[in-house]
Image (cartoon, rainbow, N blue to C red; front, side, top):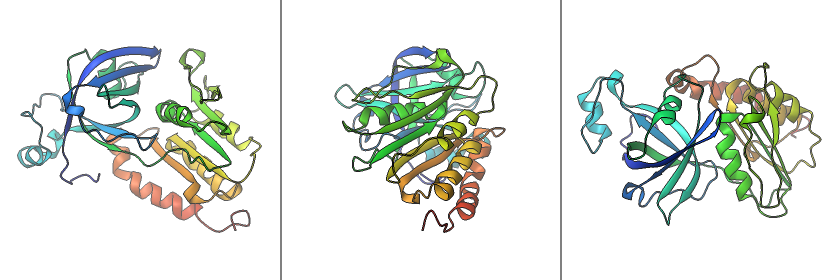
Length: 281
């Protein structure tokens, strides 16, 4: 889904909204525009929501080739990626959860105020992770931005799976009712005044790993993701192919700014951390 490639814009309609916690809003999208929506294989499926810049309006149906040919880059749609929390192909209903911190950001405030009946434009779905049923155990770790994918992954776990899930949130009011089919729930880490990811680093590095055969999903703010990747790769000796790990966002960067540098940043991190060690040999 590289920028600049011709892609078909999907459309959906807001069916209903729900405030799950003080900092998370759920939107359920529907409509015939979701017919053929290809989610289901992965638990980290995502869509890229498209927003018109302020003062800009595009003709329906949206055509990215036409938009890019007739508008300056500053007037191209803004993109924000969100995990598919649930997809019901029978009802054609797509559920997305949004982290909301007042007026901060673009998609969060929009999700907090959007009303049923409004049209939504998107690209996707993408995705590449689902829990491996053959793994000896599973590690899931992330902040609020990774909570929808972690929740979907826990619900998809095979019965009998050993799961250690850690989710860092602001406080007790942001906890949700999430569990595996066997009733395993996340360890909720309350951030309080600590930096984002500090509690996750402490929890994962202090965990007594049941075995080396782990399938891990670690996503969220890029700073702590980098440190956990280092720990898992170099100190725990976990093979690269057994890790789904990525920085969804980066402290101090806008979404556009982070996407512009993310590929190079990831390449640098991999070059630094993917070296042979005694543990990984």
